[in-house]
Length: 126
Image 1 (tube, helix red, strand yellow):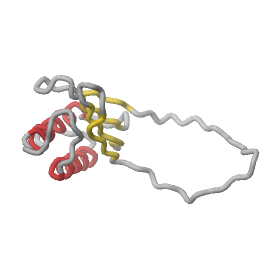
Image 2 (tube, one colour; image 1 turned 90 degrees about the horizontal axis):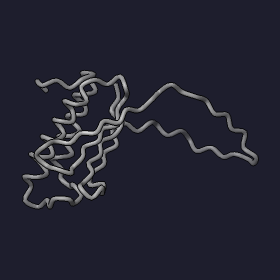
Image 3 (cartoon, rainbow, N blue to C red; image 1 turned 180 degrees about the vertical axis):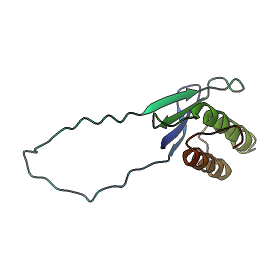
């Protein structure tokens, strides 16, 4: 299963954190002549957007873009909130509503996403 991205949005609606977990491989650059012959294909792949808001911090939104088959998104959102509380809010150099720039937050978020993807879900024991 795949978790594509994680976003944290503040009360004012400003993006204070973005992490792109899954970036598809870029193909070699191609050049085309005009007019372009475009063929659009319909793919049945969808992206699920899960919004999470924890009671401790009103207005902060944690957003996860994931494959629809990915289970345990609610538990993952709780874990992200826990990581935010432990490594951003307890950082004396972090101010609320400001962009999150904390190495420990990044490392722990990446670790939580890896566990969630490998397991296909994110249980309470993670």
